[in-house]
Image 1: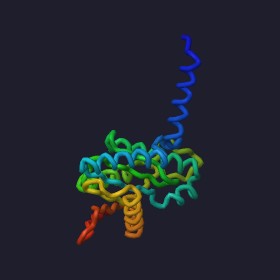
Image 2: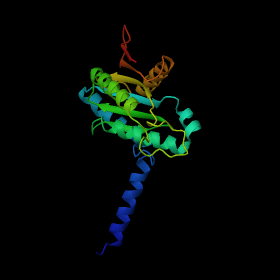
Image 3: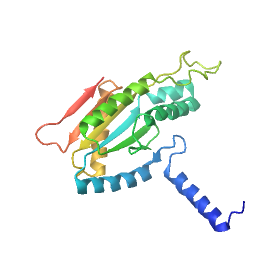
Length: 204
């Protein structure tokens, strides 16, 4: 089949564009692309008064996984855990990798109640997922039943999406830190803008 040079060039450019937008390990969006997509969504949502939720997800004690089992296993933990998270979020939700073991999730048209339910579901599927149970190498000190990890989540919801992305991310980061300090494997979700009281929810 003959493929013209212009068509080949377009295919190559499309491939480069995709590669520039995703994280090569987990196939989630990268930080730059996430910021672009999220900014566009928040602008549209603010115009129409739609609620938006945002979560920052971070693996608990991930350095210990790398130190004990090696970086190859650490990569496998990231890949398989993100796969189970992808299975429980909607196609319209936007997941991106923003750090080594830190991810961010944008939930369009999602009020706080929906974010709370999803956060709990994510914690459950991650905690119950067994990494590498079937492919355990004989020279590894990996547990016989596979490796289980947990994550912590900090999140924020804006009822009309009038809060800018940087502020939502900052609030979510602070709540993530608080969830870590409170014992890990839990979420803290805050409704913003805050007025007289802060609305927090915690799950262990």
